Image (tube, rainbow, N blue to C red):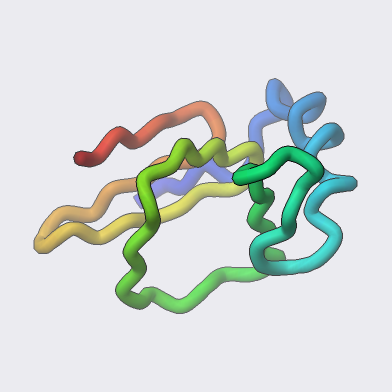
Amino acid sequence: MLLTRHLDANAALVSLIEPLATRDGFNQTALPGVQVLRASCDVARGPHIYEPSLMIIAQGSKLAYLGPRTLEYGAGHYLIQA
């Protein structure tokens, strides 16, 4: 599967988010309920359940596994899953 690693079109968005993501993991922002997540390396596959949220991936990509399905989303793509 070909993953979307970087899109130059997102460079402005990345430069705005970067100062907020000072370390790997979830970083709080000045806005209540808004967090920025940073991962500097691949994260092992594992079960995750997220609270209902809007996630914007500015750089890199993510693979989600739902039963037998593999879903890729990242910069320039979207995933809506109920």
